[in-house]
Every structure is written in structure tokens, then in C-alpha cells.
Image 1: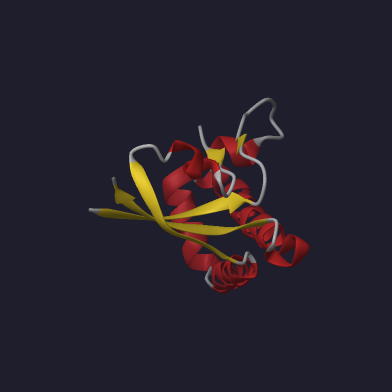
Image 2 (image 1 turned 120 degrees about the horizontal axis):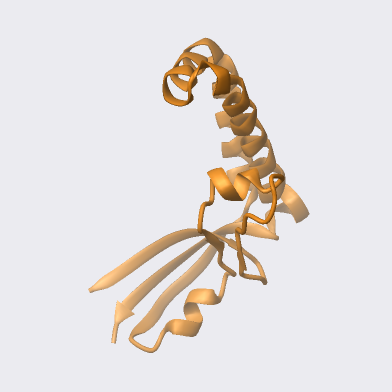
Length: 129
């Protein structure tokens, strides 16, 4: 069989999302236990499969997506604040509103950085050997 993978990657480096202090809220709440793989990371583990295809989708696409999600969130603030109050409690709703807004803004900046050539989406098509 074949396996298609779509993941966010960095053009050179793989790194962990680690929570070392209270300032690491994005790693704690959005990427818990996660890793940002490098574009070629999966290719180092290709002993049991053949790489049929590997291509990159420029990060500018996800920059636009993150900005659209932010605009949609802002346009639906009343509804979302109700959901956040029910999910996180009334005392925490504003904090989560800010977390999500900063998350979308941060993602847009990352994906758009260096004209979308630093962080982007990597696609892989693997075939079992």
C-alpha cells in the first residue's frame, strides 16, 4: 500500500515543543508533547518504505489560512466567548480568547516568514518496499 503524509515542517531543523517556564504557554496548550519536524526528518527513517514523492507547499498558504481563521474568530466573538466560558469557565474565557488570537497571529507570522520558505507544509508519498 501507499501512505500520504501532510505535516507542518521547518526547512532545516527539527525541535521539540518544550514547556520550561510559564512563558511556554503555546507549547503547553497547543503543541503538548509535540515536535516540529524538519522537512527531511521522515526521510531518515525510510528503510521499510520507498519515497515515491516529496513536495513542499509554501508557508504563505498557511499564513493566509491563519489570518482567515483569526478574522473568522473575531467576527464570531460572542459565540466563541460563550463556548470558551462553557469549556474553560467564565474566569478563564478571556485568557483563552487571547491565547487563540495570539496563536493564529503567531502561526501567520511563522508561515509567512522568509516569504514562506522557513516553515511550510511538507507532503510525502511513501510506498511499502
